[in-house]
Image (cartoon, rainbow, N blue to C red; front, side, top):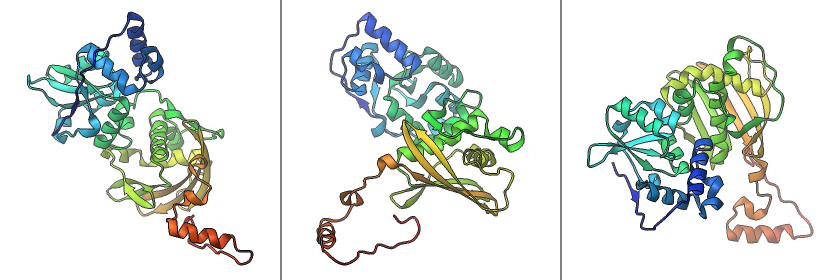
Length: 328
């Protein structure tokens, strides 16, 4: 276990108006990014350094820290997602250190103390680092499974551009549950953010496996085992989004989904294939805003780029580029 704290030597001070803005931003948005001009801060890290200094709390650098997985065994995971907190370990006084991006949320600290029967000491963490830290330890989809089953989904900034038609009852009803909608949106959003080209959702004997293709390499994503109970619901939700027949599970189906993720329009191609232990899905992500339509954007080496430049300037001839489907 190695927990790294940032040394704060600067002197900060908030006016009553600034502190009220901090309180409202943390309560409504869960972070300080929107009020940086009000605080006179250039970056969110600077704003959180100031907040930690004023509250006399330590600022943890989660990107450089690691914890013993045993720490999580006796800590309710639902509190991690309900309040956006994460247990790091005990300090020199035997108190449980809990990372949070909202140190003003006293209900979270009280709940953590009651659940663990330990005194709790908050340490301030940057929201982006805390989110990645939670995902790296609990896996994709864990937030939905443990923390959002009874909450209304906020759609993670994902908007389906086409109107959906779906039947009431059965798999369709379960697929439209808020928790399932959010789970599928989280999977798609995660893939778009890390610039994955494909998502493979595979049905196996031991459960479901999700893999992202990043730079041509399939990478298995960590997931909580409880996600397996949502396997059929995830498939049904994707079928509904692609306007496919959710009742048909014996033949392959292909569809298309148009999404808007974080303000960007994303085109998704969906292929569903019946397998031994259920239906497998391959999702092709086409993010037009991330495509660089230039020779430089292809990533050629300098010598190949120079040679190609000479060839295309020739008055006659043909350059034939071939490859398997999807090779680009």
